[in-house]
Image (cartoon, rainbow, N blue to C red; front, side):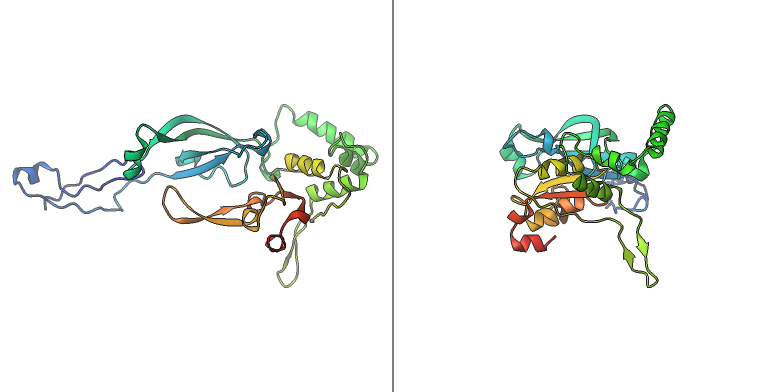
Length: 278
């Protein structure tokens, strides 16, 4: 009625919109003016919640990887994708329960990290920038390697050097890591340049060690076992988002290793239905 605008600051996940006008004109007339929310005049802030999980090689034997919620604002949003290996610097804060959960929880509360900086430990090849200090040294090393003999053999021997022999297998793994450009036919069909590998052999011939080494040096690599993995865990599963309450898709090993390498050990131990889901 009075035409005034009231700005309400939202500091939490949930808020209750103001309904009664607090202007001096409405107070003097003792009339409870009703407020209407205007989205056009509102100021919005970019927000993203990231679920961060510790690496498998950092988990103790028999334990389950722990996860933590990371809250990102403004320029820090969309800096990390599923499957990226990152280091987060931020503030460790509590997130109190609301509603009936707060009555039962008492002094307990969820925790999260408000991110101040995100750094990538492993980057895609197209995102790697040359360092001015080491650029000349690396260029000389590459030129020396190119001018030498048996370049492919030297690169293949650098894959899992602690494992003796298996030269043909290491060459195949090298070709998979290097890949090839995509080809597009005349009718528009795209042919991928990456290859799939199936390692078969007797127990104890270092198949698992080779897979673990490849998953570590690849820009995006995920190592999993077929014995404890299901088709849903490899592709995607439907879960409910704790922040919005909506149904979302949670990516599995194949999704997390997109544009990278997914190493599945003991595929023969998987169920037939789960194997066909791949």
